[in-house]
Length: 107
Image (cartoon, rainbow, N blue to C red; front, side, top):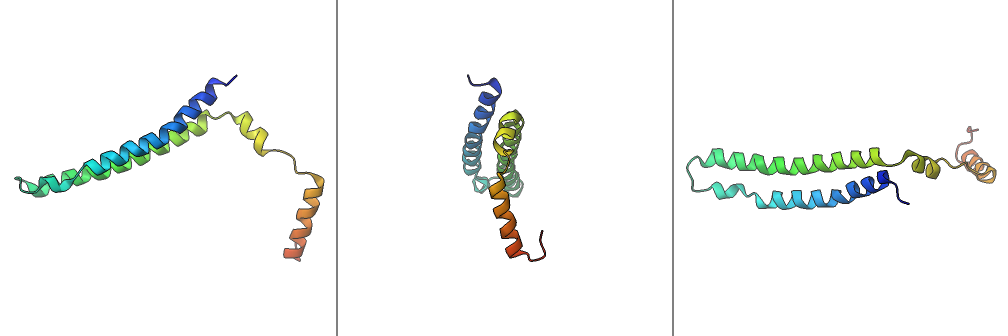
């Protein structure tokens, strides 16, 4: 049975490409050059340019927030079971030999 926490983390992870895609589409839709020929061209150009840049950075911030939420919703027990396995004695001896060959003063 899949845990609720894992489902939430998976959904949040799958939202990351969606947020990037929508942010990129919004970024491409905003064209500051459409202000040409209108009164207050300079002010409108700068406002549209600011809106374009803000939309880009908002999508980046959204992805960062989603990534952090994925990290906090992941199950710590699964992470610990995967990454904290004991190193076998044979592998430790082999690693020591390599370190001694590369670093003569090493232990």
